[in-house]
Length: 206
View 1: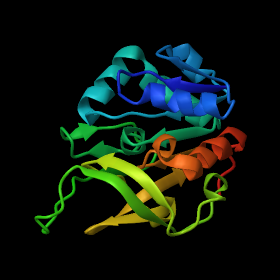
View 2: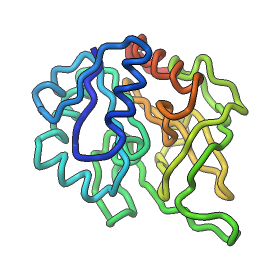
View 3: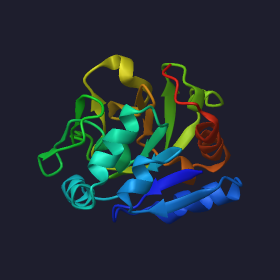
């Protein structure tokens, strides 16, 4: 069973639909006790970092996530869920969960033809092996929608990059936590395969 965290951020139902399509049982819940005791967790989201952190704290989900992480529960972050797992975000100058040390800067681009947010399909380059990426090869394309991006303090936490004038981390992880800036649930067969991989991952650090 995969528990999808409901913290008033968008994209929850599309993640559940993808899991339903794969025949993977899941629930969407705002309940902190359900999250703290979950078998595995998906932490998705589209929205504003400061608002998201406020809702997490209001519902006690920040503590529940930290408890789940500490006991080794496999966790997968998606989009906003790949940013606010870090220490800080420039979006609203927000202190975040701090599960991985790092920050989330905003794209600063010189090319006027490139728009923010970075939206659409883009190539990903795999830089380190991970069980969730076992069927992904460099050059595969995934769907992105974001203005900020995760930047871990340690390069060892980066498993894949992408480029949008700036080279930025597209997949990061530490211990039993893995996260993608792109949306696997909107990225066709290869994205669905990643969700399937997550459903089978035991949370062992790579």
